[in-house]
Length: 324
Image (cartoon, rainbow, N blue to C red; front, side):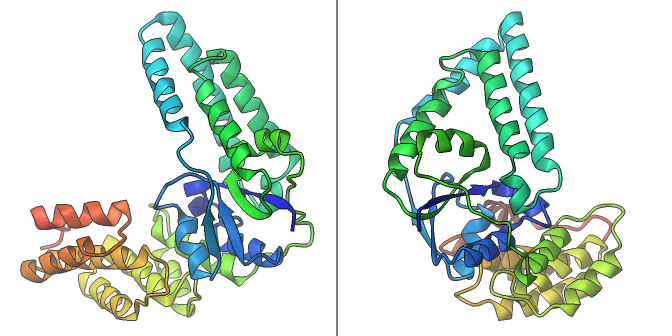
């Protein structure tokens, strides 16, 4: 397989029903890949670091310390310098406007094919050109150029599928003549992406949600490796917790905790136990809650939100507003 660049959306995967972490697993199966190169940065809580190993894809880390971190620090210092002067603030506003315009493109409904379309990739080019025009060449833009050049060097001679940030695709294609985008014209999304979309939606409650319908949808599903039943139960527990139904939330979370396995998504134990600690706290079982929080902190990997929840719970008992 030639070098094939697949766009990475980072946390935005959680917001797109038709292009989420489950969809990426389906795309990789469609492409016949068994492993994927990782060139999307070091974020340990990236949703694909859960989904792809759970779907039995090997992640192969690409790149390393290339000096881009120092260049980005220089960029931040440059932004701080500009913000002190009227003309500098005007330049920063222009760069921010370009970023908002590109963000609007990314927040619109995305599918894998649309993410690779001329419209979206053109918007990425326009965004970076506008930032360069606003900040000029130098510390304002050098950090990205250095990172792209280093990444392209790391990818020279690579084969197979590699995940790269979506907005880097145009720059990398210019630097890597042998690289290509995947042909997804025959790709058909399946159940893995649909189930992942349901769980992502359930974790992000809105005021106008039909909570009963969400719970019914979660109860109908049996789960899969990317979105196991334990996560569906945990998401349902969050809905019960949101309406103050502590007994139902606890029952769901305890069932989820007992269903955890070593080959499931690696963030799930921390998320389940941290929320279970909160529910036990809210029910007045402080000693048991603290033990649950400490169990979270003892895990080899804990997502930041679960770690912060557990640390706060150890310091002070969690109380659910409006619940005695």
